[in-house]
Amino acid sequence: MVTKLCLLVPLASGEEIRQVLVEQECLDRAFTPRRIGNELALPVHEGFLPDAIDFEHRLEQVEVEPAPPAIDPHSRLYNSIASLSGVSDAMLQSIPKKWERLDDLILFPKDAFQQQGWVSIIQQYPDFFSIVAQALSAERIGRQQPIANDQMRSAQVELLHGENGWVEVKDNGLVYGFDATKVMYSSGNVTERHRMATLQAEGDIVIDAYAGIGYYTMQLLVHANVEHVHACEINPNSIHALEWSANENNVQSRLTVHPGDNQVTLRELKGTADRVLLGYLPSSEPTWEPAIQSLKETGGTLHIHMNVEEEGIDAWCEATLDKCLQFASKAGRHWEVVSHHLEKVKWYAPRIRHVVLDVSFSSINSAS
Image (cartoon, rainbow, N blue to C red):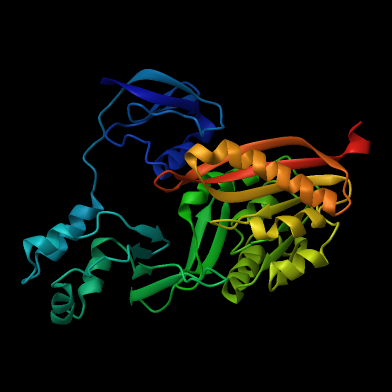
């Protein structure tokens, strides 16, 4: 036993919170979590600050056991490739140490197996990526490419081994289905997806202005029990995935999909919503005005996603509130801000955070 800094959480929420810590690279896997009564002690790295943690917790020094030796996927991959003739030490050092797993599909970074020498090895061993898949207990292998610079922010994945990119991913009791070679799926947004599931929004009419495959729509329909979601989406591949997931999660009767440009579809939904999700990066600002117009005349809530420099977050929040009130006034809505909440989702780049600002409006007359 060794004494280690641990995050103590309710046992019932332990697995979900452990996954959040894994996503945020805060869990110290060198030690084994320990059950203490009705709590679970999760070892975390020294210096861990639970600033973005919004569940019941406390930090304490706890005695825990060192973790048993891990079955290291990178070691298995390294050993499998090292057994091939012609692979140099420099090439072995360039073998990826990180990748994303979606169902039985492994997605490597865009530079994986692209360095000097790999082309000849792959030509020498036609089953090279089959060997890689076997080492990682996967069926399919892909390589990430930059997100397309188009209105739909289409995913671009090169499939290296396997027949197609369709995957089914389970999260928070739901299942999402999508073609990973055609649409985006961000594993790093897990905390925001789960936050949507806990909103006090039962009976709300919601507009998801950038619905995608239904990251947030499914959580709202299944767990937050909203009355209906109007999902605006321009990408046909995302719409197919969204409709598949709605049927699979049995919420299709409470979902209406609005294909096309949300600058058009939002205006067709004017005055209908209790809340609007604006989940587009790096900036959702072009849709703020029509989103405000789509709220009910008595007010409602916007969930505004944005990439913001860390030191500029407070100023951005203030400017956003001012701009939203200006848009409301322009639309003839006499509102005031009654509440707002800032969620720091993740680091998007050095010094740049993906944040979500929840802004709630109420009619001045009804509030007084």
